[in-house]
Image (spheres, rainbow, N blue to C red):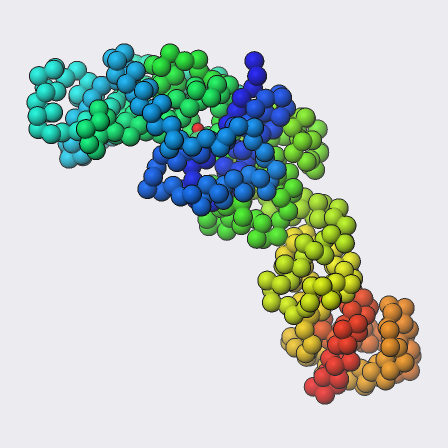
Length: 481
Ligand code: GLU
């Protein structure tokens, strides 16, 4: 049997982190078993689906390296297939027309509420006589189509993650709607979600349905549909939800929903993909944390997917990202960082200043965890004028600080092409000439060059500022401050 799995996003928003993680698991499973990974866009909800979201999803999967073997298939182009299936269910007498009006359904629910019962459809139109049907038709009522669900039925499946799962028919809310009411003359209206999924999974020969555990109740309903349509039930694997540190479902409140939020925060695609493999899966060597997707695929199987929710760990993601980031040669990294500096509004010429930007990259790259850290790390190196923060300006009030910088300025006249060694020599000379502690010289120099007391390597920063002709300007400003 060839493994065939699918990812079936609804294009009602940008590629969601949960969908992306489900896609990762499906991709890994397909690749591990030499199977097929299929992409299906579930766009039957015409009110909420949008082509730009479809594009966003395709771009996101591609960015993460999740290439698909078939598709994208669009449910909106397959409506005839779903209609045929609804007709089959009617022909087999496994489904029927329900003529209840929204008001009648609402009344039913209120009565149930008053009796402290769970809301459900009470199957009242399951056995209408032809005369009753004709009466409703004559009133102009448009029926929905409902699949019969036996209340006494137990639906049991061996979930590849959760082991045996059992649902009672009576907990599924009564006979389920599989097609909406017709708008015009057609025999019934738009087929609904669970039916479309099952028809597609049958038609696409899906062997394993791997998806988030929020779909478990759908699975119980879908198994009934497979049976009603006379098809083989695939295997199911329900993956754990992604949780925040408080153990709640990761949501907008955590600042991330779409995969692009991570890109914007400065994470690399390879690192995100790597981290998602670990969100709910434990590799056989549980100490191994760095994997490319093809490497993880060699090891991946469903038996090591965890039942418990997967806690999102920002520190781990930062660490993984830094591992990937540090593997990028600086000559390449500089080109990746340039757009980040540009969007921060720093003034430079990407071409003319390339050599300088490369040196800046070499200086800051060891401390970067996210690409966006480059903005913060190099903030004090761009621009010309000095702006002090509180600590920087307090440093300039220290006794001797300005004299030290004055002496440095005089020394600088001898070094048209300042090197790190020469910068160190200047510091040593000024320290002994002025007979002060070296710490005072270093701190004053940092304040005079950058306005602050924290930052990347001081001697290297100085050399970079010198190359742009900015060090003397700033030191003079500091002396005059
Ligand atoms: N379209 C569904 C969703 O976006 C997925 C359905 C499925 O995987 O069966 O949640």
